[in-house]
Length: 220
Image (cartoon, rainbow, N blue to C red; front, side, top):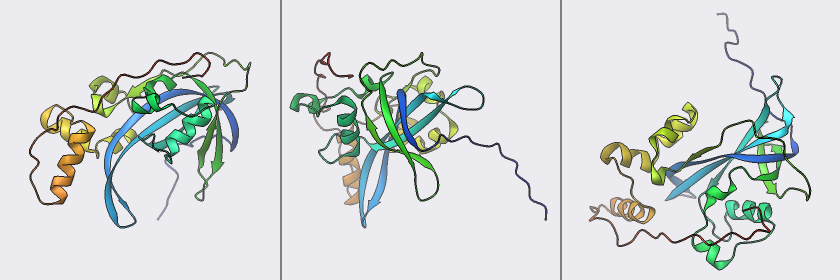
């Protein structure tokens, strides 16, 4: 039995601290997760950065991504990353409705380290040093929010990310009805199924709010 390498080599950036620019914000949807024996719903996102000073063999900048729970709760990893990136924590008003899309095309620093499988992953995020200017962006910006389904944006994603999204509640909802439930409705429907009950319909309101104005002395 002869076996040979039929794949292509994947270039991975070296571990370390890298200057970065956010080029992608992708919601991968809500999934049922098992946490210490308890099932729960988890809405997750992927943030992707371009590393303008770290170039691959073909001259293009490396990119690197990190996954976060879609939450600004006090102990949430996303809140911790954004707090370090912004240089300050969120105000009470910002926590009511922060527009995460504001991070797109913004610069920062990412710390990347090897995990126990030898893969280089983002472990923390920080703001850019004062006075540092980034070169022009190379990659196109990508944005996809499954809560506000955009088929064209979905079609532009890689097959691997689509596969993850295709396992989400949002994808199932959109495929079946052409619409996506809001988070509160989804949670009620899921809890009803867990209790062997039939979901009776949407709740009043969608929990939306107007995002507060952005101060000029922080990146977003």
